[in-house]
Image: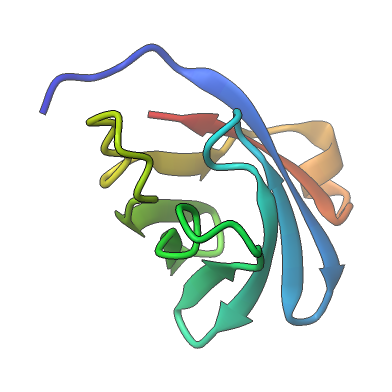
Length: 99
């Protein structure tokens, strides 16, 4: 698979079962943890299929892309935690790179 340009993203835990992802227009939002998956919380029917698989505590991958109708397929997009001082200190905010 061709590698796309890396971009920064932010993942913030709001409580034990909810996170907010800021990763561009179509992947950002509030999510709920369901087992090994993050499912988007939205009323927008086009975004409702969006699901991330929690690969490791430092890696998420889109396993179900939103249905945007413009041939955009985000399946396989991965967020990987970038090493940083704040991650090492245990902050709830994490910065990630999208691949």
